Image (cartoon, rainbow, N blue to C red; front, side, top):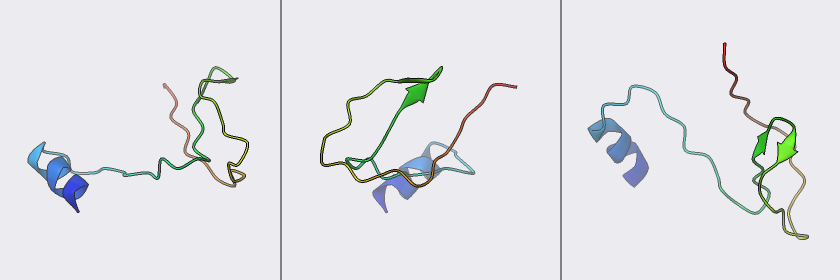
Length: 52
């Protein structure tokens, strides 16, 4: 895909390309940072990024 080629060109060895659909949530410090549409599907899984 275009994203895979771009990441290779940038020198990435590992990358994720996640769906940014209507059910996408961004939470920081326990606070939801983006507005979720009323029609959004429930979020059944997630990816956490934590500082060590």
